[in-house]
Amino acid sequence: MVIHPTAIIDPKAEIGADVFIGPYVIIEGNVKIGRGTKIYARAHILGATEIGEDCQIHMGAIIGHEPQDLGFKDQESLLKIGHRNIFRENVTVHRGTQKGSMTYIGHDNYFMGGVHIAHNCTIGNKVILCNNALVAGYVQIEDQAFISGGVVIHQFTRIGKLAMISGWSALSKDVPPFLIAQGRNCVKAINVVGLRRAGYPLSVRREIQRAFKTLFRSGLNIHQALSVLEAQELSPEVRYMVEFIKNSKRGICRGNPRRQTRISAEMEEDE
Image 1 (cartoon, one colour):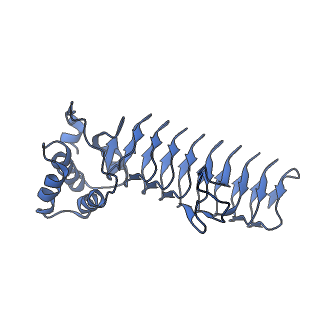
Image 2: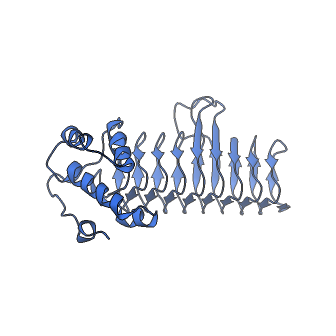
Image 3: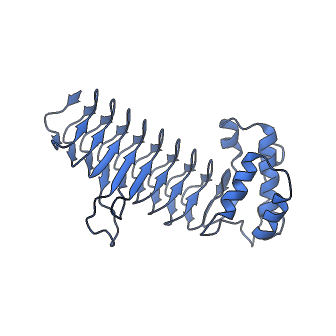
């Protein structure tokens, strides 16, 4: 274990083996830090915060502070972070609002500089959030989603597995899995490159493409499109997409009704 002499560490904190703590770091409260984690200069970790093994917390990050919520009444709430997460410069992650509630972050995620994760969010595994993405309270982001720089996500919104959000988008509706969203609540295509890299076979990618056309390019409303899909024999991936949409409480992002973007040649001839 390496602890810089200028670091300030609460005696209640539990620090695992082989942890590196840099200059002017502040750790206060019932913080738990797993073995092998590195905490760089001037990071501040506080509250009932649990951090897993082999994480990186870079300069100026603030992890586990009180939520930015007028309803917060100084209750003890939680932040739980899994293993191998990277928090780059000036990332802020807040714990839950209600007593005993939690902000949860899974494993192997990458949060680039200036990212904000608000209270009561749930982040899955292998998610990437690029610089200055802002995630409001109670947002759910599923595994392997990619959130580009400057994206803002409204509270209670869900981002599905392997979805990709283009830079500077503003979302207040759910983004179904495997899709690319761009602009304000608009989906434009499926995430072909992400599906390939994740190892989904061509047969599955083509079925997702056909489902995308039914949902967003057929002229049917969502209820009609779901009925068409549910009358077919579906792969687990398309079934998952259908169930995600059916369970949406905010509604889902749709294609631009004034300009139906033509599906790219890459999507039509994915190999």
